[in-house]
Amino acid sequence: MSDRIVPIRVWDAPTRLFHWATVILLGSSWLTESRGWMELHFLSGYSVIALLLFRIAWGFVGSETARFSHFVRGPIAALRHLAHLHRREPDTAIGHNAAGGWMVLAMLAMLAVQVATGLCANDDGDTEGPLFKYVSKDRSDWLSHIHAVNFKVIQIAVLLHIVAILIYLGLKRHDLVRPMITGRKHLPEALQPPMLASPMRAVVLFAVAAVAVGVAVNAL
Ligand code: HEM
Ligand code: HEM
Image (cartoon, rainbow, N blue to C red; front, side, top):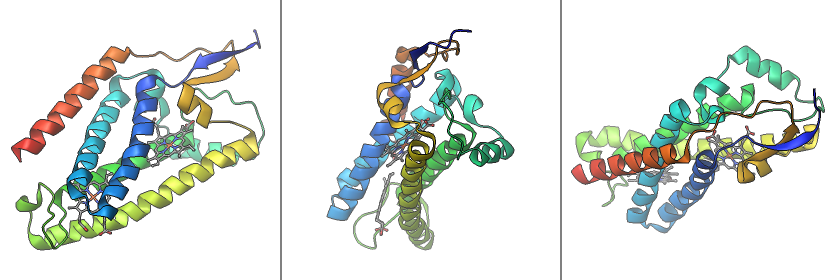
């Protein structure tokens, strides 16, 4: 078997774009709310919804490393992976590891809670989410509370996400960030590169998600 190290594309462009767009939109959602620019806050939130819909679909029909079936494994596998965290060994991972898979699901779930609660939220003033009129004021107040608390939970999760990435760098000398930017990792040539889905499929899926959100928002 050849042990030559070659660049292998482990993350497709749509997954990387999804990731960095989510980072930017979380920042813009926070900034717009803190400045009271609520129309822009809604726009930023709707963009997160379109991205989430896209990522969920991409998790079923996207490239191999983006698929839920590829990275969602049992909790035992995740714990076993964490137990080996201190071992310094070459990075041969193609896609999320067993523990990282749970982090992805948790992040997506928290983002879904954030946008779903925002849709029904109100600020006791003149700002109301588009679904406010379909819920009682009490329920909207409660969902607004969850919207605020969940944002704090997201902030903690993002901090842990970054700490985890630093731990991989410090303990294992694995640079996970560069592949999330370039898509490529330097791996043994003998490893099987992952199947990559057509970028056109991603463009169509994202367009469908964006149009669906636009139509739904205008219909409300
Ligand atoms: C708002 C902040 C962030 C959120 C919500 C977030 C969320 C996520 C999500 C959902 C994934 C899974 C990607 C996918 O499969 O679709 C992921 C992966 C990843 N993120 Fe972030 N992220 C954030 C910030 C960052 C930052 C600042 C960095 C860099 C320092 C980073 C580096 C990474 C890396 C390297 C991975 C891939 C990990 C692996 O190799 O398995 N993220 N992130
Ligand atoms: C990832 C996306 C989102 C983030 C990070 C976010 C973040 C926040 C934050 C930090 C607040 C202030 C909470 C407080 O301390 O009182 C807030 C308030 C609010 N957001 Fe969002 N939001 C998001 C999406 C949405 C969406 C999609 C909508 C509706 C279309 C929305 C509607 C509202 C409303 C109506 C408020 C005022 C309620 C209040 O002040 O409690 N948000 N948002």
